[in-house]
Image 1: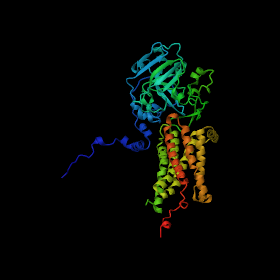
Image 2: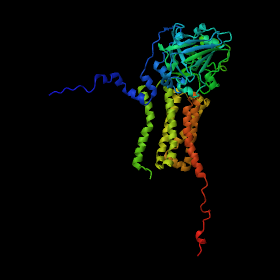
Image 3: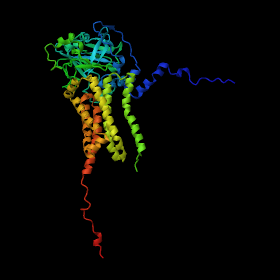
Image 4: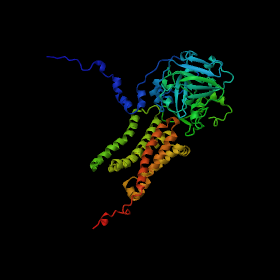
Length: 309
Length: 221
């Protein structure tokens, strides 16, 4: 007699071949290097259409999306390079309000949905140089900061712009630790902020800004060290006096207000003459103003850049 | 009576420990085979080798307290291997520094060693470690004599302190938690030694000088 028995395993339980082939990688990612976990399972965000700008492009190959979203500094979410990728999911980006006040005719609060419609979104490929000595090439999506000026009227007293990031200990677990003087404050001189390179970014790599990279709205100032570009902005103030910024308050001898990328001026504890692109082993020379000298050097004519580091 | 392995067991322990000590190096080998060192490969290699140098240094310093507290005198037989593995990872750490940071250019390395305090301190710690590694064979120990050898090898305490300074100086203010944790562990291990020394230095009550009570003589006949 022939006894027919159903197979023990339904077809749905069969491991798909690509996953099976990844098994060692998955084991390794789970056991030895949490860093690799983010890279093993790239989850892409919501697409954000933008026109590619032909004026702001680079011959350099962009750094991989996985690298830029899994490695970085965002101390509100933790002190390690992989902390933002692990903890930023707690950030709520809607509803989100941007307050603009200080030396303006009328202070205003904008809903993020409105901010997104201020200008046509463009994609710009910029170099990013971290003060720690690593660098990346990132296709940002956004619009020039000068678009904001059109919506508010700064008074004649406005000389500087102050950028304040969200500091909510419910969403940002490390706000409870005094790692820095929260909220994270950054600042630019008004002419620096108005420079066409200064970008208010709302996305990158063709999608809505990932939370670990400063969603929903962040600044990108490509000729300055990365920490000058505040993330998850909730308030922008026009002010008369130079703002006291987070890192300058933390270590004034190491991080100046200007913090322009400058291979000639070493950090107090390490050289800035070279940098290492993420993913690469060899160092490459760092360019003055991160390669944007032609466009921005004029802003600092006559200034001693060793003193005003 | 506490556990005491026989020579064969001890040899087996040593073999297993040797393999365990190689695991962190194995992690680097796996990364090299898969070409997957994470987003910042050099930082990963330098952090990994530096961290494991420090881990083995602390493990080496754990041996004496464990011998005394747990009464496992045989642990001393494993100490040299732990110390040499700390040196092994320090060599990889130094190699990563001169290779990846400076392309093996001697002048650039020398400049960095003298100019950057955290490199100076790290390099000084390595030189002392080198001296200890070179004087760790039985022949050299015999040649130096136990007492002098021990005095020389007490400089591991200095290496630990230099290691802490090296760590503190290279991180940003936001990342002080790790160097603080390592310093606390070192402080605990050195603190235990200071306490032991104070305890041993306390004057032993002079039993002979104390006058015995003369019960018997006073006993009436």
